[in-house]
Image (cartoon, rainbow over the protein chains, first blue to last red):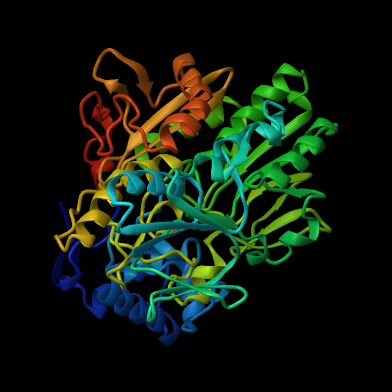
Length: 105
Length: 422
């Protein structure tokens, strides 16, 4: 398992940089991952999504799908693409400290 | 007298009726199967209709023919399940009480989920996941002078995730045989980052698309379809023009599940991945496409689940703990054109790998590689489906749980691949 340095913190990551231990996650690390993903600053709209993903994961053990995020009232699919350009499902999960979302086969 | 109710007489529901009628004493247990019609379609056959290999009548039989004696079959539309009173409520508000319930209501396409999709429906936009759609598409393809066919997966998960790729392979093959391949452009559009979700198979199938000159557009999520201008518009602003759009619309569970308040955001029933019991209700179980499990939505999965589910229903009835035995086993023949097919065999933890099946070395079926014998296997499967699979008889040498013997992980994929499979 690879490790990655964010400021003073060292975290466990997989081959694609997804964190594998959510307990190591902090808001500062999230901001640093976001920068790597091309998001200069996490706005309150970003944090609403991140908080919702983490809440869902803690309750259900699953990263919510885009469809679920859209239905949650927290955000819309369109807004997700604006907030996390290029791949909202993967980017939002990565910033939230989740493992890489399992595509269903 | 106690009652077990099975909702849905498709692949999973029919197998369960056959397995459980043999295991539950007729003097103690009534079994009632409910479906809204009496047409059992061999769903893998839909793919063959647009190319003229099958017609609708070749792949449909009465559901009642495959249910065993001693099972009551009701053809009626169910409005909802009421888990508080253990009742199934029909549209006319009549009710039937269950002691145990098995949900086997499958998945269906929902084109209305994508704005604009219904505007060009069966004019320039087609599906091949319904008998009507596949038949209409056969007519359209026959008369097609040339142009751009876009094969599109709208959203995952979908039933039979390899079907749209098989469609592309068949298109290429069919057009070549009719010397029309140069007049038609084939494009494959997917929300996934590659041809398949798992790395080894994604690489192998992606290479095949390339070889057959099918352009691939990945990570594409459709926001809407502009049927008048004949283009798909993505959330990221990309636009894909088409002359014919062959789409796999969003797949969802039955509306009845939603009316019952039992579904997730796709109307699939939250189900324990290993015991197949509902996560919420102790006397409700689920099988096949109706579940929310992270496995393929495919008949083979329902078949592998059936043995395990039958044993667990019997255990639950006897008050014994359930066996967490289901491993996500899935097994699919992928038609590759030129009378060859690829075979893939995988589960929750092990992605499709090359090798031999069902026996190491001697096979006879090679895994993840086009071959004639796999094509023959797929063709023979229609017979196996009606005569062995639905009656719940064992299929020789193919166990419910996946076997590692015969499979080989390509050396260069080690490490990288293992991180992708979990």
